[in-house]
Image 1 (cartoon, rainbow, N blue to C red):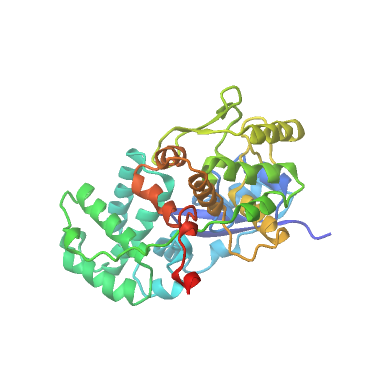
Image 2 (cartoon, helix red, strand yellow):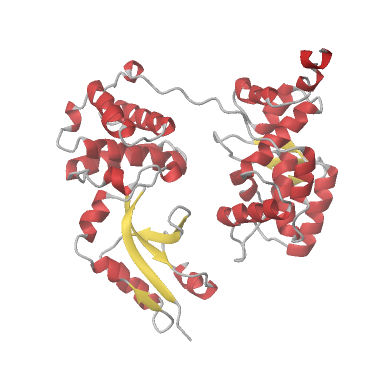
Length: 387
């Protein structure tokens, strides 16, 4: 029998020098690794990681001695330190490719210190982990592009150059371009204590896309596709309450107020609490789920007790349901939220209540559902019918 193997690698992750720990799913190995301080899962790299230390391979080797084979050959490759300093990009949608970054020079020590100061400032202001990672990585790429120039000498013209010579040349998205502008603006205002006149920079227009919505029949088939009660309950709760993925996975048992028929969503997007209505039918399903699975802390837990259900596994649950229900559309978890809001509107629910339930700060965000609701559109009679 081939013994299990753990593979170590080193890279920059969200501005931090880390060692990734990759292995096939094994509860015994994971239990041992859980004793390591700061062990964190990276959904992008599909691996666990810890901050880099000189003796990290020895620490892991001692921890897993006589149990598995630890492959740390990647840590000994020539140039690994330089490559780690240069960084492996970690941006939304994996937009930055090796081809785009291979000719960029690594940051010097002074730039690294400035970047680290920016990262610490954002954390102290309690920016979300996603924003910290996105802004740090966007700024890293920007500073690497002007590595030979002192940070104090960078001007508006340089930002225009970067947009034209790097973002447009590499065919990167308008969304990423806006991220860079936002990161640069915040960095110069907080760390350099001077303002970049980003208002003079032409920001790309965001594409105005309609939300993707499934019909009620498609939703019914989708939610009925799974026999597994946990899978069925998770997908049903996403739709029946219009939840975001993170909101579902962060729910705890005491967030369900069955007597009042409410769910309390705590510290969601924008660090806001809100309540959403819980239907009687959904409450019955939740009670059946609780009896069958008996979660201890989180409403939905993974294979390891007291740990949240993995967001990647939830995506697979949806994918299986889509296949079983034979829906020929690229459905994502957020489609369930869009469908919920649209169906509420079609049922005659006031837009102001929908805004509160979804947790939108601005009414204009909620109004987009009026463009996909067929409530009034279907009443329009085409002149073609009168020919």
